[in-house]
Amino acid sequence: MENKVRVRFAPSPTGPLHIGGVRTALYNYLFAKKHQGDFILRIEDTDQTRYVEKAEDYIIESLNWCGIPYDEGPAKPGNFGPYKQSERKEIYQKYIQVLLDKGHAYYAFDTPSELHDLRQKAEQKGEKFSYGPTNRNELNNSLHFSENEVKKRIQAQDYVVRFKTPVNKTMNIKDEVRGYIEVQTDNLDDKILFKSDGMPTYHLANIVDDHLMEISHVIRGEEWLPSLPLHVLLYEAFGWEAPSFAHLPLILKPNGKGKLSKRDGDKDGFPVFPLQWKDPKTGSLSSGYREEHYLPETLVNVLAFLGWNPGTEQELFSLKELIQAFDLKKVNKAGAKFDPKKTLWFQQQYLQKAPIEYLLEEFLNELESMDIHPSQAYVEEVIQTVKERAAFASDLWELSSFYFEAPKDFAQKASKKVWKEDTEVVMKKLIEVISEVDDFSEENLKEEVKPWIADSGYGFGKVMQPLRLSLVGDMKGPDVFHILACIGKNEAVKRINFAIKSLGLA
Image 1 (cartoon, rainbow, N blue to C red):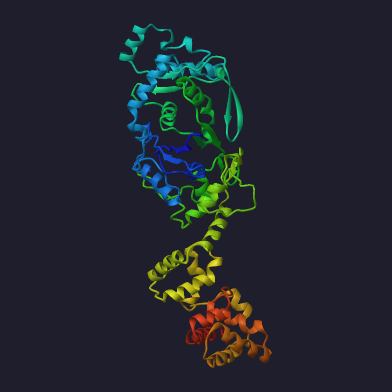
Image 2: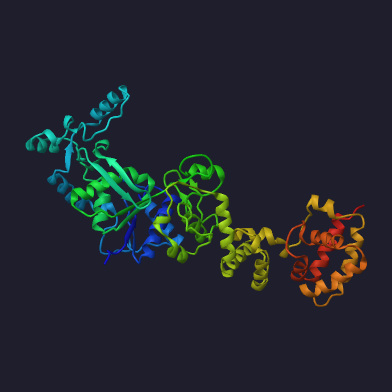
């Protein structure tokens, strides 16, 4: 029987969660649920200098808003906690000692100024300095000091613990997305695993935590690909079985080359964060999809397609459908361009699917703020009529304002086009016709007005276009007879008279 699927999303609390991070979390969530596994949140806060207050809460709130909550993590303890790396210091000290005892790691005492000088000398030769298998025996470290000398130095000065990369080894590493990757260890450097302040670097903490938390698959961003050889070597050094690795493609900016950044969103007017973020230091606000009134289903569907393709024509996927369809084999290697227009299209599709209760609540609140108090049934009727042209609940007012208030003025271009010298006469006759209609329903109005237009010889456009202008103030909106029926006879007559007064030619 195969081991249980356990995956983790392991962000650093250094600021707001970029949608690239949300996409990583989403893929982990989909994979876990597809295989009846666990989705774990681990906060990687070993770098306390970059820690940002409230960033952890923001991460958790973002996952919950997207509908992809974690199964284990902070405030949801399982059997593998703590779930914050800053609370696991003693664990890392134990495991760095294991590597030192096995000869897979060593103390390095090189000062920052010594390393700076070595880098400068390499640059002068047109080379790049690398601390690793080819030169470590010539540098300031425990590999060629006596045990007593090492102890003295540990007591007297700052140090780091570096990984001892194997010499002249060819690695053939499998990635679930990219296939096999060949690496020569002599091209690697000896990464720092531990610092004298008692804190591990990302590399050690990551491997130890993944092992102890029984992570079966590491699904993470492409930016971690260069670290893959070291991580595999660390598993080998500890004598542990490595998990499967899958490195996801970058999310690229809409135009040009490179990774999608906040600057791209600011420039083109779209969010790159799931929720609004207020910088605790500067107080500056960054927009979020939630506050811009996108539905969470929209963001999830958009992100799912940034790097993955189901291989079918289907584009709209519920979360349940995504879980069923998701497969790491269908994740692309190439980066995926973020398309704000396509995101807007998805939003429009999901707004049409949104429960009427959601749209009612949003629109009623907006009407309330304008001191407009129609019946709920009336508002629902209006929403059902105009919503197909809306992308956001906030679009509803612009699409339907004429159902609630009469136009105060008339679009100039439309007025010139449809209001002619004889229009006043036509509109006055129309008032006479509709004043006689007792059953002011949409169907009955059509039955009364259409034959009159045909008999009068005016032509349909000569009546209906100025009528629309009178009711709406412009040449937009749904069926005119629907508007008439909704606003009622008295209001309709009042609006037509106002148009005659405002637009009548002297």
